[in-house]
Image 1 (cartoon, helix red, strand yellow):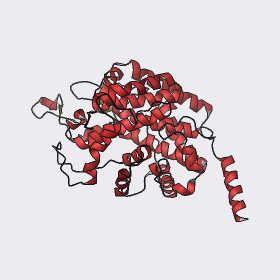
Image 2: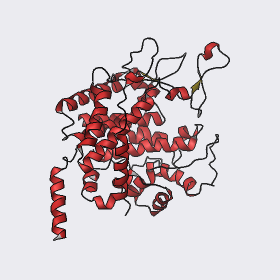
Image 3: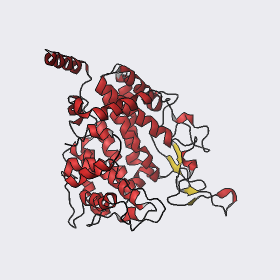
Length: 392
């Protein structure tokens, strides 16, 4: 009798639950539905998600209009930030032009006049709230996620203009650079949040149409602007993150052919060009914090490979004629996490932290190498990834 009651309760909840979203691309195909129908298997991660979502209910709906001031000629509706690794030149009047100090982050780049931290917090909060709505069908979470998204993207008084013309500006040099598009990678979370909110009474068709129109405009900007062209041509992690973003945005608005072309070209343009046969990534090893940048670039490649799963392009198993592959790039870093005392030969800074974040869990799900399971066990805490890449 109890079993029958439990089954009926679950069936009733399934009828009430929002429809399976079709445009959530940051998790493997089918992973959302599988996790929701088997909640008992992902309880620790789900519990953390709900806890995070309840905290996100306290998130103020920031907008680009919250910056106290902008540079001359820049509208407040335009996203604005300054370059993180550029500092005043002590030998020049007023410190201008700023000079580069790789690995040393200038706090000006994340102060109240920069939109970077605001955008990241809003996109993360909206995605967390939308996921909580998807799993628990709680309109309170959906309502706040919708509010955050409407303020940032839709409301006439507060909406961000769909461009990054003025991202990572260098004082005394320029008012924005293509390299600044690395900061819009959090917009993929907004796309996922919107897909998850469809079906909620808090997210109307008018909201959905307005957001999709905004995303189409941003995708157009990314493909046609000088800053977009500069970032697309980048040879290091910036180029991979550009591909990842444009692919995700293209899939969201239904430009599947564009997405498929970018992922297919990434085999030679990114994997073969950026990874050596031994798995090293020379352009990332040249950075001050070379381990972190190697992982950062690999994170983008993992995300691009995941997007490929949704359109039938396999980057996970691709190997260049010279033997370069995503897996080799991952395996190149693994020994230095397995044994954190093992010298990292490229380190030039005092940073010694070595972590692969959530990559081992994803690598285990793709490559089934038990060696990666031990890396997962080294990580402390509960990761949301456990809901979508469960370890058996």
